[in-house]
Image (cartoon, rainbow, N blue to C red; front, top):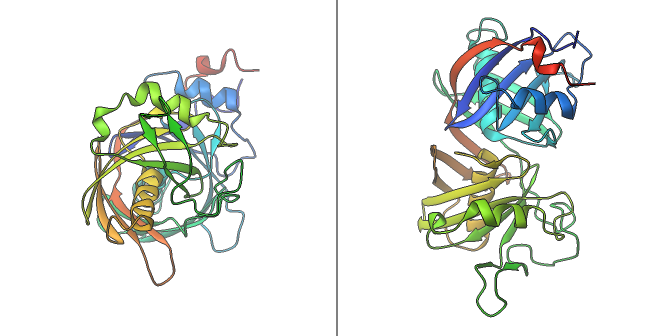
Length: 294
């Protein structure tokens, strides 16, 4: 029988971003791409991101978290998923310790301090954005990644052009537009995600700065498609807007699922994301899910 069979899971959401949380602490099992796709294939367990808890690797941290996209690929960061993990580790009877107000989580992208503001609202320190072309990464050198040459559509009348590139633990390209909902992101998203300029693919954001403290955003997520919210995408949009001198260093970012408050802190350059996490249901992974997994 597969090692994940009958494992308990939490189905959660961060602003409608579908998150499944799985606790593998105390085991050595690593979820494979095929297993992640199998979990995503069932309605009760499907996810935009799968957050898997492992035993801490670094002294002083509370857990190591591996993050998977719907297609089974691994992500470096997921802000909405991190808030869901924080709720699970501070409120869920099976995964957490009640009464805790802070956590230090480790992911592929680094250490993420999380603080609890209320029963369901958390602030995640997403760390400093990476802005150099080879850190994002891009496939070729660009001295200024706040606006680089990329367009889609006719050369004399492109649909989108000149995005800002940012890494928040995963690569993002943010295009500034008047209305993010005017574009066919279902069609444009896959083309841009897989553009050769992005050797690790990219998350694609369409952002409209409505006021210095308000950004409207839609995101095509690498490996997941259109989601109702993307925490790292909201962070990237705020950083991009500040770099373009379009917004304040703190703003509300409105996504289809709701609002996040993002601050690019001047004192240390870290990006803080504040928003809710909610439990939808819990269950166990049915053994049949893994029948075709080698």
